Length: 52
Image (cartoon, rainbow, N blue to C red; front, side, top):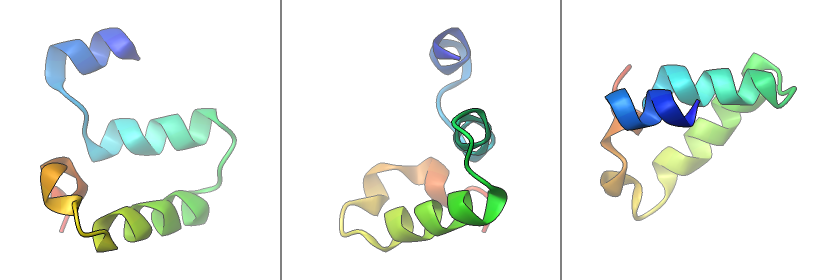
């Protein structure tokens, strides 16, 4: 996964894949993303908004 990150940068697809690999269900990953998007520093992570 780190090789993929180095090649393309982090994105929502990789974030969701990581959640899946860690055993989280889709709804849990979506809550995680919603919380991250609501944080004051969310603008530092433009990939958080790629699918909106």
